[in-house]
Length: 83
Image (cartoon, rainbow, N blue to C red):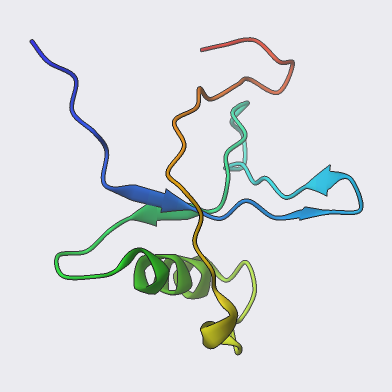
């Protein structure tokens, strides 16, 4: 059984040596803001829509969204353990 590639995008914000992460209330896992791509959406469109939907902030400057290479990473528990 093969492993599929998830159709997700994430926003990694690093400012002043800190990284923006979020988590669901009552859960231990932290994650980068983002989500699943809708059919026909570009990565930038997905990211702007997900940020708007989740109300992390209102992305008034949509033209300032930039993309980097795709990265694959593991999710960590709040204490640094792998799930």
